[in-house]
Amino acid sequence: MEEFEYVILGQGSAAFAAAIRANEIGIKTAMIGNGATKGAVLGGTCINVGCVPSKRLITVSTFVEELRKRRYAGLEYTIGKPDYSKIVEEKDRLVDDLRVEKYKNVLEGMENVTFINETGVFKDANTIMAGTREVKSKHILIATGARASIPKIKGIEKTNYLTNEEALSITRLPTSLIVIGGRALGLEFAQLFARMGVKVTLLQRSDRIIPNWEPEISNYMARYLKESGVGIVTGATPVEIDSKDGLKSVTATVGGKSAVFEAEEILFATGRIANIEKLNLTAAGVQLNEKNFIKVDRTLKTTTGHIYAAGDVTGEPMLEPLAAKEGNIATSNIFENAGKVINLNEIPSAIFTYPEAAMVGMTEDQVVKNKIKCSCSPVEFKFVAKAAILGDTRGIAKIVIDAKTKRILGVHLLAPHAAELIHEGVLAVKFGLTIDDIIDTVHVFPTLSEGLKLAALAFYEDVSKLSCCTV
Image (cartoon, rainbow, N blue to C red):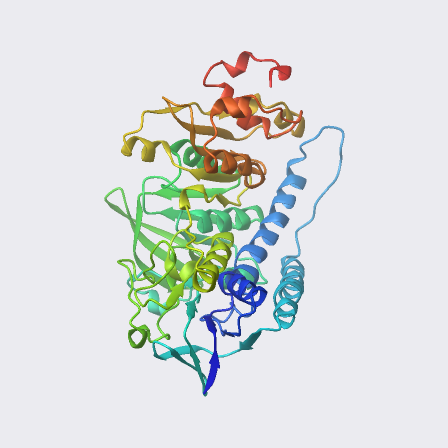
């Protein structure tokens, strides 16, 4: 039997952040890795089959779209058919390089951390079996992440389909694709493949895509996706999947009627489930919540006092930087009695379509449900000078405030580089700033960040009648 002060189950963002913090404070730690899926190797989902490879392919597809648009007068050029296999090869090299630089080398540099490339299984609340090795510790962190959740649909067991992992590794573009799921993952993949020349149909169960976002963001996003060539069908509930003569079909109920959609490939973007099946959590007394993710309190402690959990294995929101923050905080709470908690209201999220979408804080609907008198004033980016300079005036900015205090409760953006722009909104929500604080802050001209200032000014002025120098 081997004894450690700390055992971390997992090898992704939460696990690495926890290990780095443990190493910094001198804790003898074992990180037990081996991902639950083939693609999630050292570094976990984000670096291997998530954020990094998907955003690389999205970036390339956006560049292809820009070349086809011929946005600026006076330029003559042609673009041939993209060699998608080479695009994927280059993506793979990027992932391999970053895995070595950001994970393998970092792990090897942590003198207090031992990596065990096995699947960890609880023998009891303090003992983990890692292959044939028995590891014991007084403190344990579960950070095993999550994987694609596939709904139970008639015929699915007989039909090959794609998840995010397979979709990122195919080297030949299909002629047509059905994407099931209209939230962040589904939208990103739908636009990526549509811009690469694939005929894409997106099926979304609810009456609009990204239903948990502001309606204005959802509506504008749908318009821009359609312009990219994505066919969107909302109110669609898949009931059967089949495969015949080289095509796959989805039979769905749409508006009370049956409809059949056909394509060469089907991609599921229907949420994620926790990687917990192999852990034997019962032996550790660790309980799950109502959605079958590990139940934790605000300090990330599970129902077994000395066992904590962090990252996607605890459920939504599933975001790489949040997972890392949770891994760090859990470790500090265990060994430094820090008592830290995370305020999810100040955690931003983004959708990497183009234009991008980003949000932080509360939506208008959430504010109203909390019985706060709300005020909102969306502003289109066509009023932002930098957008006109770039030749891309798509987008909208919406600030949600407490009407009484003018305090900013939420910021919602759809615009080029929205994921970069949202951080002013994050600070506003985090530190309780008002729209007057934003208005009083000088913004560089010309920049897209002025969109947020215009959204603040819109509570007082008709921004369509303001000159550039007003902001």
